[in-house]
Length: 92
Image 1 (cartoon, rainbow, N blue to C red):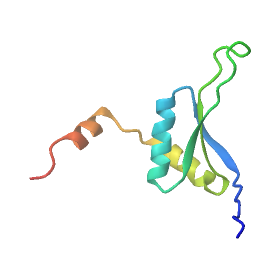
Image 2 (cartoon, one colour):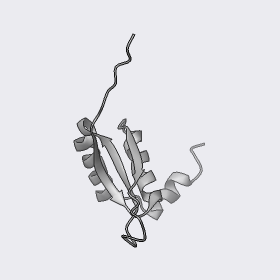
Image 3 (cartoon, rainbow, N blue to C red):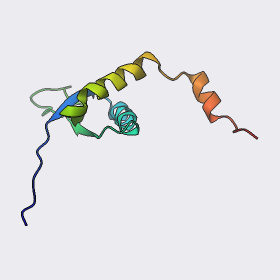
């Protein structure tokens, strides 16, 4: 039985110089059910010094929702006060 290969088109929905920021975005997308991967966009430093970083890729059919999710997150960032409340003791 031949195994069917699925070639899905991946689309860039986010790029950054900070891997930690890309990991947060990937986690955000995955928490909403969107499959996301991180890929290095490293350039040879002897040819393009200072160019590099990472991108977040999703399937083409999930790109629109992914972009909307990222934009919604940017419009309502978590503040230090929000974190203090969420990290406080739970209800008794």
